[in-house]
Image (cartoon, rainbow, N blue to C red; front, side, top):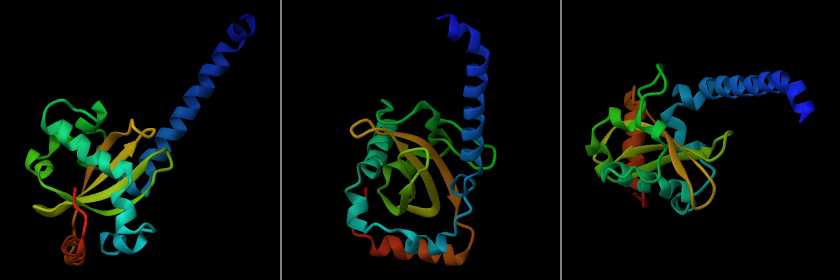
Amino acid sequence: MEKIKKYKHIIIILVLIVFVVLYYQFNQSEIKKGTVDLATISDTADDTEKEVSNNPYIKQIRIALNGYLDGTNTGLEEDALYARDVDMKCGLNNFSKTYYQSKFVVLSAMDNEFGGIWAYIVFVDNPSTVFIVWVDGVSGDQRLRTFCEKPITSKEEADSVKEIIKNSTYTY
């Protein structure tokens, strides 16, 4: 116990440094800044559409959206409700619930270096905006942690998204 007291300040400083580094990396990631080119996103996915559809993280997105709609907030972190970044519009509370009532299509999904997955989704009834979603957690206890918009900024992106929706077998 005496050794812990002796090194308490060093341990606190090291923990703070780790958190600062992780926070900086998270905020600087390409996905967080929404700079991925949506016109090529479907070509970057390694998984097939069926494999993605069976992924528990993807299924968790619908569970979380339903929890948000019914007011229980089942399956989501409280942080997912609110804006958390000045560079992007984020938070479930910042968008119309009519988005979440619509089925969505997964444009792409990839591992997140902090755990879980990043998924780019678009709602079938309103395909003008793509959303970036982070779902994390252990099997059976996944949580939607981040929900941000990635506006479609070009005709090529819009056409690519419409084509993916049209050809998609799986909606959630």
